[in-house]
Length: 294
Image (tube, rainbow, N blue to C red; front, side):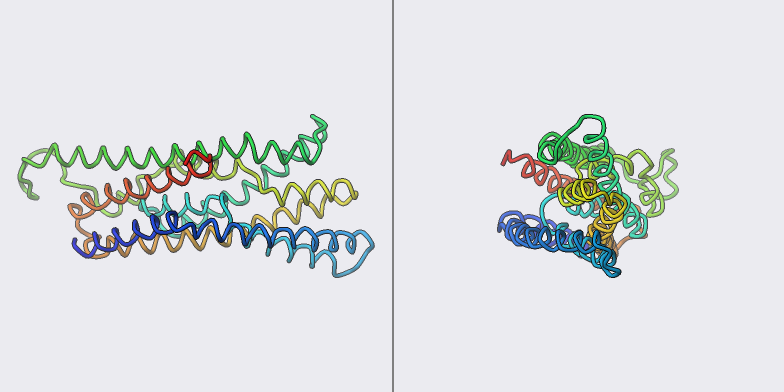
């Protein structure tokens, strides 16, 4: 138990240190500078593709994938939500990785729908599309992320209160009280259904990548829309590579924190609520930062 609490405290301290030190903002500034270089490389790749250069398509896909990887280091893209959720909810690493990848591909789908729907139906320009993505859609995404964080906090708090309400009853396996004394590891892992999964994916996917919007608009105007769609998917896979890595790290860290007593329902019942409260608070704090409220 002491080992689990120590690891949990270190995880929480790492979250707080990252936010307080401004290291995330420094990474975001570096990523923004790289994105300007990407736009120049993108223009060259598209010109080569349009002129029939046989290697241009592979160049464009590689560039788009690399952009997705670097751009994921900036704000948004759900990496902190995936990480926080992975720490708070005992989701297997493989399942959380699939959720992370689905969320990234969902962002690509949102970008494609926004560009083609906006241009064909509403007649939007590139500036209007970008403004919509960075304005209303970014705010909705941040609010959804914040709500998931609050949900994790409330769920952890309810578990703590329920445990305290039973604290005056001495339990053992044969006490005959008519209820069990805590969930097993398998029950905790299976307690998160499709609703939570869809909410997690939707909160991330609702905000499209601005680089994908740029690529889709340019390829549409140049008469090569299929290249734009393929490049957008390549960007999503690059972003997904980062979020999947975060998902695996979060799942491994959580299992490490519970490793000293993962088979004991009582230990899980004590540690899991605290993990949910701390991780949910971090996710909610990040959402407030995304909204520029703090």
